Structure formats: structure tokens, C-alpha cells
Length: 170
Image (cartoon, rainbow, N blue to C red; front, side, top):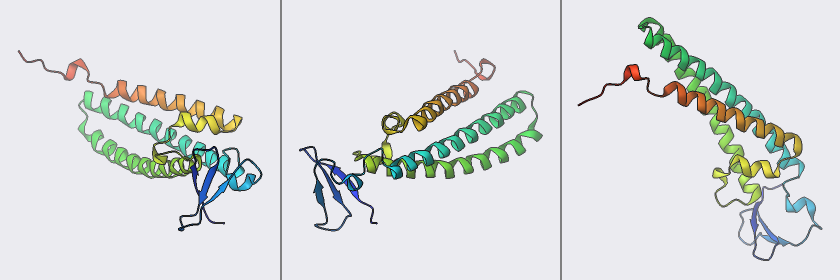
């Protein structure tokens, strides 16, 4: 089955196109439910399930990275340069893994954005996806959003400049 580009029209119908010139067709109403690709379709919800799994992995990786950043900060404060080298290597490996997971997440978000006819599919926000997710996935996405916020807050606190490292000029 070809992948279709879904576009909204000004009259409430949608236009399906498989990117061939003249291949688009308009669907009115819900008589062709399979062709309309509604957000509650099995394939769409499957993409959301994949996104949940990807986001869970991304949170795990960020949490592991937080542990390394904590250790790195402690090693720096305790003036233990021998630990810094191994911590920097571990941090680099984690960042490489995080980039791979982030690419997967971006691909899934872009595909979901295309299903929804979003103007910029790669920029689809989690809040918009939550609106179209089934109840179970919705709860998981809301939990993940909170976990990301917690990780971001903790990372922000960790990397904030400690007064011990600042030097004031007069």
C-alpha cells in the first residue's frame, strides 16, 4: 500500500496524494474510513506506541547522562583529574547513543506530523500528539513529559554556575 500525503482542504474534506502528479483524490465524510487515516487508526496508534518506547529510552539515556555529569562535577570539585578522563569517555559514548535515539524520535514525530497534516511535521509538539493518542498512550506520554521536565530541571541545576567557580571583576 503506498504511503499517502494527507492534506486538509478548506471544505472539511481531506486530499490524499501518493506524490504522483494527478494522483490525489478527495474523500468526503467517513465512508472510506481506511483511506482517511484518522488519528485513531491502528497504524497511527502503533506509531504513537513506538514513540512512547523511543521516548522512554531517551529518558533513560538522559538519566544515565545526568549521573555521569554529577560524577564529573564531583571529580572536578575534588580535583581528581584521573577520574575525569574516564568520565569524559563515558559521557561521549552516552551522547552518541542519545543522538541515535533522538534521530529515531524525530523520524517518528515527523511521520506522525505528516499523518496529522501538520504544516511542519518535524516540529510537532508532544502536547499535540497527546490530543490524538489513545487513553493508555496518552497517560504514558503525559508521564514521559513530566520525566523530561524533571531531567531538564535537574540538568539545569547541575550545570548552573556554582559561586565557587565565579570570579567578579571590579
